[in-house]
Image 1 (cartoon, rainbow, N blue to C red):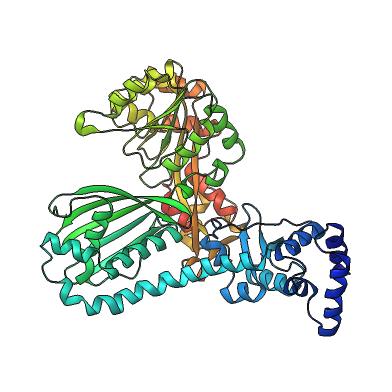
Image 2 (spheres, one colour):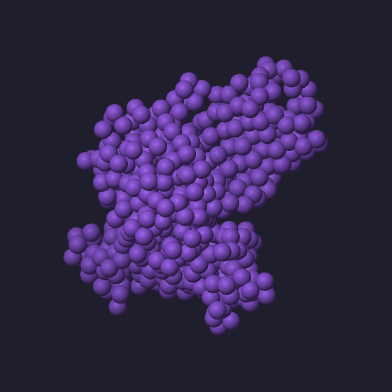
Length: 569
């Protein structure tokens, strides 16, 4: 029946003539082959014609998978390569809900749909594309995965072993360093490791020298994970190769150095910031992966929702005031700031930043780096920025009284100011500002919103299962939810998609403190942090542990993860 409808629609759309269709159906009757394959093989219709007709007939999307299209790792990890090739399909993870879109050559193949559903346990939505383009994506993604894993090991096991004696000689000679840094095994190792880091969503790569060996680790979801290290004989050449890429002085190994470079991966440009430091057994190098694609998220993707999302956007729309993000290094403050800048960015606004350093270059935002060595500090940058007629200003970090005071006076004169401050929670920001010398009346007059932020690891959806927390975890949970005994809790048991960690990805949790008139009055009176905190909670503020446990109840994370990132009130 569906074949008849397909044939009728192809004729009606003019993609195939009636005589050509009769010829194809005659061949089908003799051979028993699939009609669409006959139309393509006999040159009576193109694969694109068939795909577009399926799209119109079944009312499903047609995707033209171009050269720049690339699956994310968590997408192609969902389905084995053998299944993708057997049924000629690829999975796309939907942004919300327990469903995925499967791009198929033949959307009528119910065996394919049932196989994907059994592998993923997700609801399946269909899309259609051509066999050639689907297979090109399968080749690019699955072969790249295998290439990276096997090649790293090959370099260590074969190339390095045969050149060990060579690499151990004349390592103090700069000319020799240049030669060895450009040798094939060294270049390949660095390139492949960068590929693996971006593919896994790593934020940093650590190269650490030991006496007789070395360690290489990737920071993924906030935790360091070891990867295949090179032999010690290759280590200095690899460090030199990285320093060459970052335009650092390869002859200087006694002082810490900084550099930067870019590389292209899967059609996008990735920035890398490099830092080297001399240790006892050689130079330690850390590469910070600055992948703009992983940074520019919607506020909803970060974890904002409901009233907090609505109120944050309202505050960003105000003509003046200060918005502070607080938390330790690595708590996602920069990501939240840049996401807020995306809301502020407009052809009708002048948005200016002061950063140390400028990590991500964003179109439409005027970004200024500090240069303390020549006297261009945060405070000095701010003085000049305020002469540039800004509407909104983002300050990378408030570190001293001068910067804080200029920022606050800028907010009083009609600017919305965003910045970060290192405090453990939202309410202690006021005492921190008081400690660095800011008058309480100025803080009370300018502060609009303070957000304390942390990142919690999320449970891998592929291996998520019910579990019973231990007594210590339940005891912690009881301080927030007395009805904890009647709750259902989840954790990940480990699978190939999460590399047997049980956790995959991270989500932000927040303590959202609005500076209301009662809070402003207490700040002006310089009350202690605990009094201020009690008043904020009475006014409806959800604390970090409470927000973390909300994520636990929703099944996004575990109690142990919530405990690890939150202080108990």
